[in-house]
Length: 189
Image (cartoon, rainbow, N blue to C red; front, top):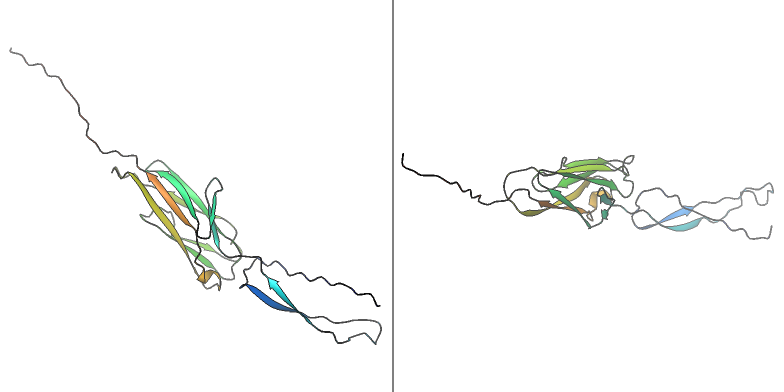
């Protein structure tokens, strides 16, 4: 009865990004067969919780090179000969639906929006990038695909540290002149 007992309190990892550090309360009560101790008043304990979840989005290429935050993922494409995919997922569970808007030049992406919800936030979705063969010598071109969030979620709705994709496109067309020579025989007949 006179031995101190340690009580361990552990918060549940809920996969949600809580806004910073937050307080919670542990409510305690005493139950005993001894009526002198049963339902004895006891102080509740205030606890400070540091959340280990962080909101955001990550993208990766087929070789599992990742980018998150304000990072950039680089992809090389060849005009008319190839396509590349990159894969998108969220870093923590949203409370509301999150729309990932895909904003890029020239319409290279096969979609302009991905949708994640509290059940699919960690399931990768792919974006296919294709370069059309235009028969024009454009040289090497670089385009950037930006992403943004649209959501009523308190965290994702205001989130701005979102990775980009840099596409370097190698053209398969070359401008030039082709000279051909012909030999003509001239004679009198």
